[in-house]
Length: 117
Image (cartoon, rainbow, N blue to C red):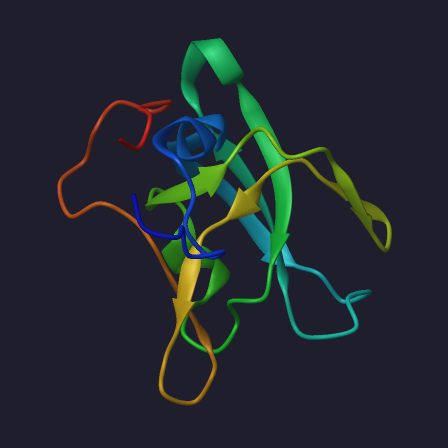
Protein backbone atom coordinates (compact mmCIF):
# COMPACT_ATOMS: atom_id res chain seq x y z
CA UNK A 1 0.00 0.00 0.00
CA UNK A 2 1.03 3.57 -0.62
CA UNK A 3 1.76 6.18 1.99
CA UNK A 4 -1.31 7.63 3.73
CA UNK A 5 -1.79 11.39 3.37
CA UNK A 6 -1.59 13.04 6.82
CA UNK A 7 -4.89 14.83 6.03
CA UNK A 8 -6.66 11.52 5.46
CA UNK A 9 -8.86 10.03 8.17
CA UNK A 10 -10.44 6.61 8.46
CA UNK A 11 -14.17 5.99 8.29
CA UNK A 12 -14.02 5.07 11.98
CA UNK A 13 -12.58 8.52 12.79
CA UNK A 14 -15.30 10.20 10.72
CA UNK A 15 -18.00 8.25 12.53
CA UNK A 16 -16.75 9.63 15.87
CA UNK A 17 -18.03 13.06 14.77
CA UNK A 18 -21.71 13.09 15.70
CA UNK A 19 -23.29 15.57 13.25
CA UNK A 20 -27.03 15.93 13.64
CA UNK A 21 -29.84 18.02 12.23
CA UNK A 22 -31.92 20.24 14.47
CA UNK A 23 -34.46 23.02 14.23
CA UNK A 24 -33.68 26.49 15.54
CA UNK A 25 -36.39 27.34 18.07
CA UNK A 26 -34.91 30.61 19.34
CA UNK A 27 -32.40 33.10 17.95
CA UNK A 28 -31.39 36.31 19.67
CA UNK A 29 -28.63 38.89 19.54
CA UNK A 30 -25.44 38.21 21.49
CA UNK A 31 -24.25 41.75 22.33
CA UNK A 32 -21.43 40.51 24.62
CA UNK A 33 -19.71 38.62 21.77
CA UNK A 34 -16.41 40.02 20.47
CA UNK A 35 -17.59 39.49 16.87
CA UNK A 36 -21.27 39.93 15.89
CA UNK A 37 -23.14 36.73 16.74
CA UNK A 38 -26.47 35.24 17.75
CA UNK A 39 -27.36 32.89 20.58
CA UNK A 40 -29.31 29.93 19.19
CA UNK A 41 -31.48 27.30 20.88
CA UNK A 42 -31.63 24.24 18.62
CA UNK A 43 -34.03 21.30 19.08
CA UNK A 44 -32.34 17.99 18.24
CA UNK A 45 -35.32 15.79 19.15
CA UNK A 46 -36.04 13.58 22.13
CA UNK A 47 -32.70 11.72 22.26
CA UNK A 48 -30.46 14.82 22.41
CA UNK A 49 -32.87 17.57 23.40
CA UNK A 50 -32.50 21.33 23.09
CA UNK A 51 -28.96 22.71 22.97
CA UNK A 52 -27.60 26.25 23.13
CA UNK A 53 -24.83 27.68 20.96
CA UNK A 54 -23.52 30.93 19.61
CA UNK A 55 -23.00 31.48 15.90
CA UNK A 56 -21.31 34.26 13.94
CA UNK A 57 -23.95 34.31 11.20
CA UNK A 58 -25.19 37.91 11.37
CA UNK A 59 -24.07 38.81 7.85
CA UNK A 60 -26.68 36.68 6.05
CA UNK A 61 -29.35 36.01 8.68
CA UNK A 62 -31.77 37.88 10.94
CA UNK A 63 -32.87 36.21 14.19
CA UNK A 64 -36.57 36.07 13.28
CA UNK A 65 -35.80 34.37 9.94
CA UNK A 66 -33.71 31.67 11.66
CA UNK A 67 -36.54 30.30 13.82
CA UNK A 68 -37.90 27.13 12.21
CA UNK A 69 -34.82 26.60 10.03
CA UNK A 70 -33.09 23.21 10.17
CA UNK A 71 -29.30 23.28 10.56
CA UNK A 72 -26.46 20.80 10.97
CA UNK A 73 -24.32 20.75 14.10
CA UNK A 74 -21.70 18.61 15.80
CA UNK A 75 -23.28 17.52 19.08
CA UNK A 76 -20.44 15.55 20.70
CA UNK A 77 -17.75 18.20 21.20
CA UNK A 78 -17.22 19.28 24.80
CA UNK A 79 -19.07 22.49 25.73
CA UNK A 80 -17.15 25.76 25.31
CA UNK A 81 -17.60 28.92 27.32
CA UNK A 82 -17.98 31.88 24.95
CA UNK A 83 -18.33 34.93 27.15
CA UNK A 84 -21.47 34.41 29.24
CA UNK A 85 -22.78 31.62 26.94
CA UNK A 86 -21.98 27.93 27.37
CA UNK A 87 -21.95 26.69 23.78
CA UNK A 88 -23.08 23.04 23.73
CA UNK A 89 -22.88 22.30 19.98
CA UNK A 90 -20.95 23.52 16.94
CA UNK A 91 -23.31 24.77 14.23
CA UNK A 92 -21.86 23.98 10.80
CA UNK A 93 -21.52 26.30 7.82
CA UNK A 94 -19.33 27.45 4.96
CA UNK A 95 -17.64 30.77 4.23
CA UNK A 96 -18.98 32.74 1.30
CA UNK A 97 -16.56 34.55 -1.03
CA UNK A 98 -16.22 37.37 1.54
CA UNK A 99 -15.70 35.09 4.54
CA UNK A 100 -19.22 35.40 6.01
CA UNK A 101 -20.76 32.15 7.26
CA UNK A 102 -23.57 30.44 5.33
CA UNK A 103 -25.32 27.76 7.38
CA UNK A 104 -25.22 24.10 6.37
CA UNK A 105 -28.66 22.54 6.37
CA UNK A 106 -31.06 20.32 4.50
CA UNK A 107 -33.23 21.24 1.53
CA UNK A 108 -36.12 19.01 2.67
CA UNK A 109 -37.14 18.88 6.34
CA UNK A 110 -36.09 15.71 8.14
CA UNK A 111 -36.73 14.53 11.72
CA UNK A 112 -34.77 16.47 14.36
CA UNK A 113 -31.81 14.48 15.64
CA UNK A 114 -31.15 12.73 12.34
CA UNK A 115 -27.48 11.81 11.97
CA UNK A 116 -25.32 12.85 9.03
CA UNK A 117 -23.94 9.85 7.14
